[in-house]
Image (tube, rainbow, N blue to C red; front, side, top):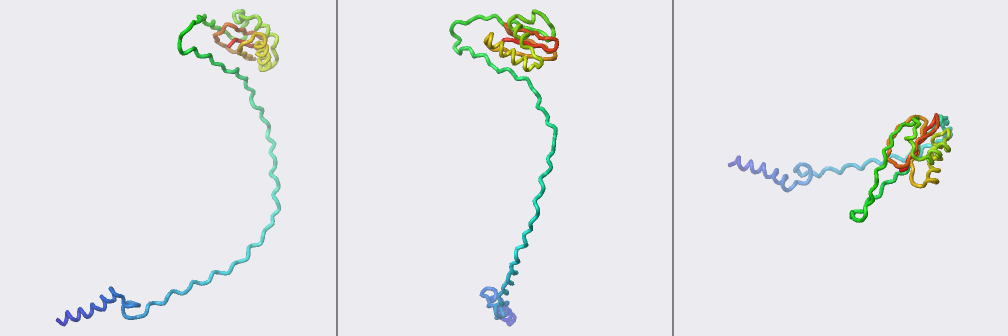
Length: 183
């Protein structure tokens, strides 16, 4: 029984320190530890660094590169789409014969490559050293004299073609050939 009493007497101070706090360090009745010291004051502000004045930079050297001419591409004719038939399918229908298929190759002189002598005269009248100038002059005169839409192709080299048209002509000179057909 003495051992029980001793055990209880030894446990009571520990239990009171654990559950009720004994004030201060470790339950022995000591005062709490002192608060931490204040942090040191910040270092004094340094004066701003002196301003540097540098001379301005010289301008960069200019490069002289050769100029390249953009390639001259032929102007394409305007695109025109056929009109759509009426959706009802009623009314009088005009029967048309299909346009003949024209096959040819430039540089070959043949009456079968021209079915309109007016266009042939316009081609021969407006031939120029430059195919682009010939093409523009021929196109302008064909539209003014004959009306309608025409496609004009001029080339210093050879070309072959196939077209479905009623009105066409191919003619030119030894160094240039032009083909005109009604669109």
